[in-house]
Length: 253
Ligand SMILES: [Zn+2]
Image (cartoon, rainbow, N blue to C red; front, side, top):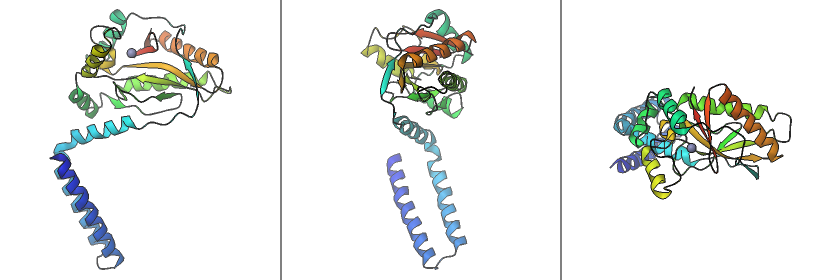
């Protein structure tokens, strides 16, 4: 039903715009009247589509998640065996994620959309120092504080690479926020891959870094990331959990 109404409005809208435009060129309608006509049509569209706003927002988010900037740098540096401490998932990551979000557990897509509309979660776009790869079982959302800390981490990482061949390097995010539904899909596909119980990814405060795209030396870049992660952990802003292919980061403050 929604798609049919949308298609109808698209066709009628295009037709009215064309009609008004032609009449304007022919000077058979005044600019004032043409504007009024377009405003009336705009208001009518708002009234008709208002009940579908959460669905439209969902489409918009899905579209956003599909677009990504193509990385221009070719060499991949992995994040394996980076010397960072491992904070206990069950004793630190999970309880602190629950505390920071006041138990804001994202059960399903409806909760995700509701959190987005209440700004408990925000969109995360590309920025200097990091890149989000095409995500399959998670979406590009985080809580506002987690987004801020991600940007801070990226800026710190870049500051350690200033005036070197590596100054344009960036780290790659391989996972971000997962609803419990998405988490269950992962569990059923890879039974040994995720920690039992609630995932901190389902609170919107975690992201995984799985590699660095580098133009210079991998070692320099890996060291810069290691320093940035350790510094922010020492400042009690994040917790770390090195996993087999990635570093799991949970924002706690
Ligand atoms: Zn993770």
